[in-house]
Amino acid sequence: MELLAEIRLYLPALLRGAVWTIALAACSAVGAIVVGLLVCGARMSGTALLVAPAKGFISLIRGTPLLLQIFYIYYGLPELGIVMPAFVAGTLALSLNFGAYLAELFRGAIQAVEPGQRQAASALGLHRLQVFALVVAPQAFRTILPALGNYATVLVKETSLVATISVLELMRAGELLANATFRVLLIYSLVGVIYYVICTAIARAFVLAERRAAIPGTLAAEMAGVGGKDAILSRFLSSFRGKDR
Image (cartoon, rainbow, N blue to C red; front, side):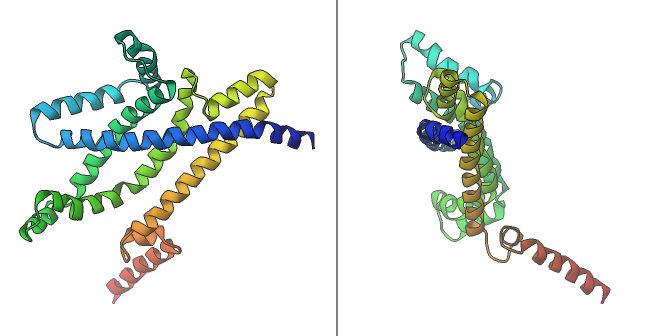
């Protein structure tokens, strides 16, 4: 009973930190998608003035630690007169970091769409923007959904690095509570449970999104649906029966 009383005592502060974690992750996710689309567009533009900076940005971000990028934005930019709140600095760093990875993810998904489909859409009289919006983007979106789910859960966990610049998110709230109460094991266990619940909920949401986005009758739909493995096994066995005949 004493343990439950302690949990009830510490949980409100940790949940307030969790709210900031979710807000930070949500803002960073929106920023990362915007950055990823812009950098991907520049990377695939074919114009040297855009391709070279896009490649350099991706290489620089992927080649340096996220923690360094957070420190650079929050502690380094003020020397140039650019001062921003810790939450904004953390959001910007996460957006730029994950945006670089998403840019390559988007590029790969777009290039995976067969060129013949673009040509067929153009032959029907669709202009380039319509071809992208109606033909390329929906297929690319289905392709990257599983990877987006992985990035989303990683993003939630990486928000813990923003605790280093005193943003009062979940990890920072746990750190302050642990320092004040010396109940380190209990508090960090609660922090871990909360992170696990958030990430599990996000992963579950993306699984449901995959099922809704999958085209009925395709292998992806069977894998995402209930009993998908049995259906695939049945198809596999029936193909062998057909060969035996």
